[in-house]
Image (cartoon, rainbow, N blue to C red; front, side):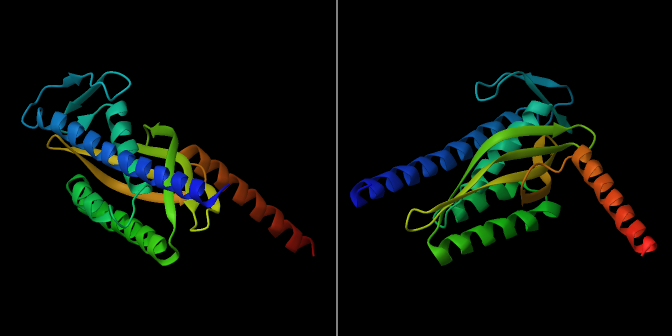
Amino acid sequence: MRPAAVARSLSELQGDRRFLIYANLVLGALLLLLTTLVFTKETRIVLVPPELAGEVWITPDDASEDYKKAWALMTATVLGNVTPATAEDVQKTLVALIAPEAYRDIELDLSDQVKMIQKDSLSVAFTPKQRIYEPDTDKIFVTGTHTVTGPAGDRREVQRTYEFRIEIRLGVPQVTHFDVYEGRPRTSDIARREAQVDEKRHERAQGQEDAD
């Protein structure tokens, strides 16, 4: 591919990423606006906003699964597509939506990503593929493809999962738990299966030692 075409493609991708970030920030603002409508209400309010797939509801201290999944998707998309130019705006926008107990973890993720981008002149993008809500833990897992592109156009793609717990406090959504890691979502079922595999591996290793 000719250098001019590569430069044009990179420019278009950067423009698309900026649009995606700001579009999600706007979506977040709209969802927050909808939330304020029930800030002082004690009854359940049912909403059917066009940005969401179906009917959602919210009360001063709880919300439907789809509402929480929408917030998790928006937050993961914004965090996964941050750039040095947008990092400050992202922090200012998300600060009102993050509980004190989770803010430090998200701040570190933002800081580490920006440092990596600046140091190596990289471009990053996150494309969500799957959302899982786990009722037992009230966690939402957003899994997708995390792409890192170098200055020469070389690309590295890995599976990445953003893990959230979103609570409604006085009618306002708050991220109270946050984690990010490579690979599939660490749901309770997967964690139990991995623990069982580790236990069996340990038992086999112990049996071999006893035999020796």
